[in-house]
Image 1 (cartoon, rainbow, N blue to C red):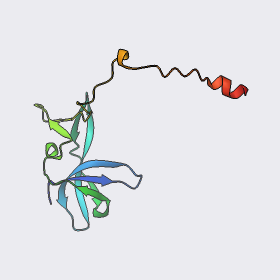
Image 2 (cartoon, one colour):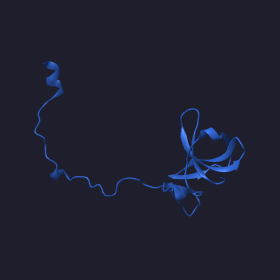
Image 3 (cartoon, rainbow, N blue to C red):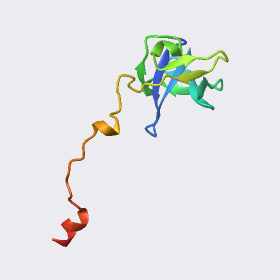
Image 4 (spheres, rainbow, N blue to C red):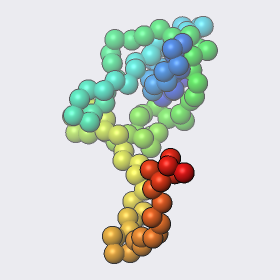
Length: 111
């Protein structure tokens, strides 16, 4: 269970990613993934104790890049993988047709 990557849901409703560092029977000591700046993320080495009930999801990996959400950089920090749809192609302006509708919200209020 140690080093397992997990989702942690806190009492205030915020969910974040963490890594289990120690199993304390009814609690876990976890390192929370924090924003380090410049689009990079890293595990905070100041461990937090959370109840096992706060764990809302387990990833089947002990390294963050195994989640498919982050890549590790040369510096040892992580960058979020861009999950935008690379296959989606925005229509060019010449391909878009005007619907021809001349309805105005102003006209609706006057009626």
